[in-house]
Length: 421
Image 1 (cartoon, rainbow, N blue to C red):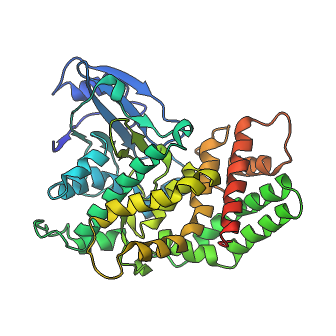
Image 2: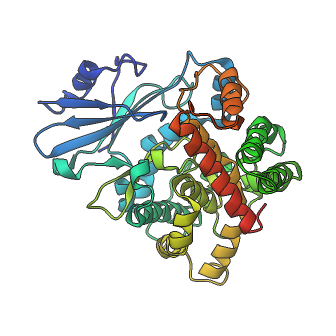
Image 3: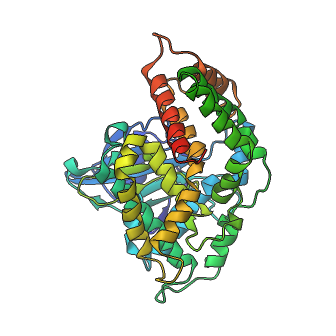
């Protein structure tokens, strides 16, 4: 269904309660039963609205954070994260679905948003598409209990393969049946979704994180391994190797010349994926990080934020081949777009996992919720968390602290054994 303008409705999620949501949707449907579900520390809430037995709609609700601290609003205004997501639901998904209808299966069926940008999206709107499913076959989070299941991982990678491949065909004009619209051409998307930042300021922001990372290895591993891993991690950060990868995958993707380059989801960790047992794919949520980049960014971000070394030793190769089987179905069968070339480029980007995947592990699993007013990485809450994680183990430690420490050490050992760091 097209987007339905919804004037006069709440502008913040705290005002968009059960009754208001029923009121918004009641113009088209009746008999609502709404279950409100909290999704941990995710930036969106997911709600299941039951229309009739066996019929449900999953609704993602987003808002601009007008009461957020100035540093947060500055980042989001420069990165245009909220705008990118609204553009996905308002424009891009419908544009792509004309030639690639499978894109609807990869995205939530309902989305409510209010924004305060002085752009073309000038009022709240809602996009709906009812989906009939039996209650026992509902969408589920990719939680820690299911992280090691190969079937779930392959479902996630298939979805990323379709997402990347559809965008690749659109951006490279490889579907002769698609009619391009002025203002929504590949060139327009490349202009707006390529990043161009040559500064090292962003990476320096993460200096306390890597100091903490090295400190965990030094404190929680015996000599000589602990100090050696600390030295390797800090050297990877200080010598510029990590900066080069960060430019290719995040900061300055306009310089990425790979033939595999496409639109990436940008935040492809398990909390942004919902899985259903009967499907061979997942539903992707949170499209604020979309940008032009190498698809290896999404691949490694998902793999390292969802698995440990023992699981990767068993299943990584099958994950690579299954992902590429789907992605390559959209590519030209020309020289340079074969699996061997892709795998070589993929391995070049593996080291980026040391920052993005491990950072989200710390933030999502830390037992104490971070104050949203606290400056990301540099704020008081983060300083206290980093100090706690580096401290020697104590009987009073929350179990999540050891889970975080073990995951960071496991990743550092893996990248050391592969001669990445």
